[in-house]
Length: 182
Image (cartoon, rainbow, N blue to C red; front, top):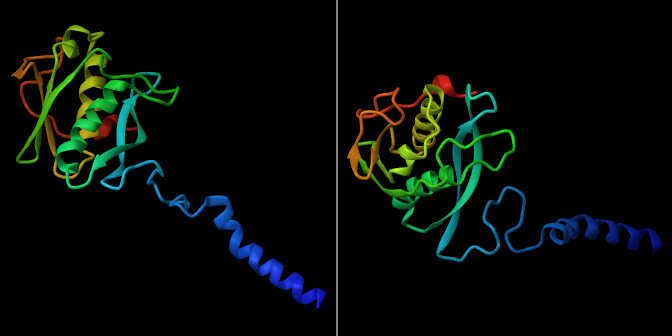
């Protein structure tokens, strides 16, 4: 009888242990849904690109953002830009957009994202050809991670500009900068 009791206890322990450790409220490994997310919303993983410590390459940083169900096509591009503006979380990465910059809007037309920033993107920019390249490629590569976006046009206060910091022509759309990725 004692062996039988131990066998039952062992089997029940194996079955119940994961439920006790991970809980029964959607906390199983691999489920990215946070338990405090309302039922009409969901968490979406996005990929952002920030400058490495040498300002030579972009490195990715994954984040979860909360979306309203059925609204992700409109909300996801704005979430990407707002997360870029807030800067990296990892210590070995560096911001590519001045933190005082505000996203004024995004419109997607024929797989091109028209991203409208406040003037602080330009006036608060630290300058230099490398800094300008990091900012533009960070925005473009982060947005082109999203389905349906192949190119990006950067606007300042709703208008096209010749340049952001004097080095790159931003009046035309940019495609992905694969050579910038580490």
